Amino acid sequence: MTEETREVRGRIPKSLKIAFEIACARLEITQTAALEEAIKEWLKKYESTSSDK
Image 1 (cartoon, helix red, strand yellow):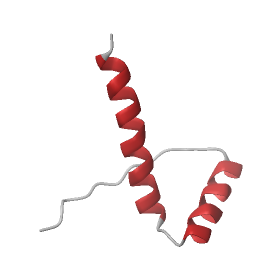
Image 2 (cartoon, one colour; image 1 turned 60 degrees about the horizontal axis):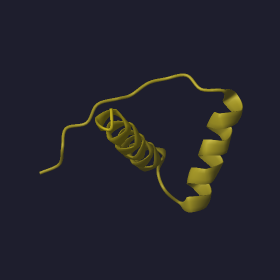
Image 3 (cartoon, helix red, strand yellow; image 1 turned 135 degrees about the vertical axis):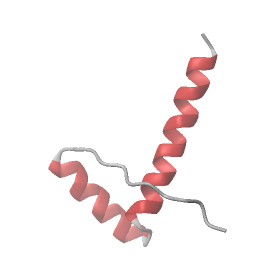
Image 4 (cartoon, one colour; image 1 turned 90 degrees about the horizontal axis):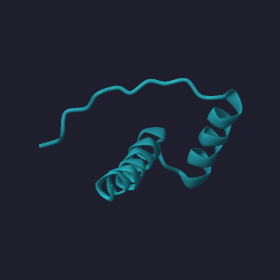
């Protein structure tokens, strides 16, 4: 059974968006997969930081 999904939206500089699209294409991964990985890493970083306080 697959997990239910939701859309995430945000605004980033055009140059960052283009660089992200190019990197995903070069790595042959979807932007969704790359964003999911980036968000998980971000959460790990900030969840461990907040628990150290």
